[in-house]
Length: 257
View 1 (tube, helix red, strand yellow):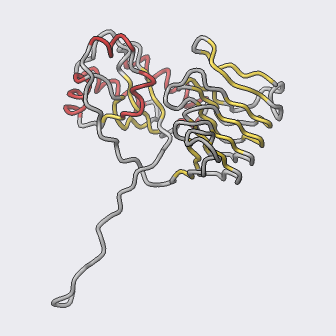
View 2: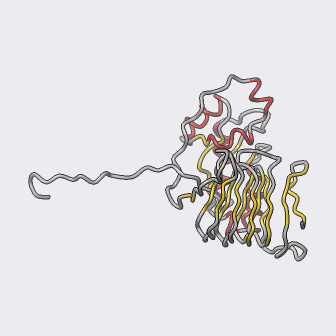
View 3: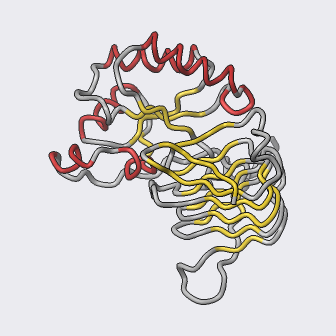
């Protein structure tokens, strides 16, 4: 470098966006059983789950595991072929555990997965700062339809592979195709008046009453409030048909319209 020269370029850019992160809801502290179950999921849909970023949700356990047990659970997730990136935001004890383990808290999963009884018994913690996700791919935020600011969000262009469209706190209406490897996400309902070959996730913040409506069903994955179904092969009675998806007693249902 010549004497007197300066560098004006910033070292990096920091952006916030929406990325697909799966949630592993642990129901018992059994690292071997967890590894077996996740390995089965990875084998069933490797393109979806191999090296997928996941959040470990411990809020459905009767007691918070100790550090050693949590470390074993994290290693089980890694051994199965997934990549744990943090803990689901819960109680102050969960926050302390995350600090000790050197993991971030992922706040977006709290509303959907923290039991109401646990929330009532503990003081409400201060909201955690959002964790900076990977900057790519950035979501496509379509302009909402005219009228109420909470009206449905409309997206008229095709959603290409690697792209993501997210409707925050509202329904999403897509009037074009959703390609393989593309994602459409909404906190409310999703209406797709075209072919769905990628992924559709409604009720992203835990709304179990949300529904998905598709004119031409060929999806990789559909999910409502965290309950999902992955399709390596579409059932004959559903492929290419108009369908609706909804939750019924925590089970994701799909039927032709």
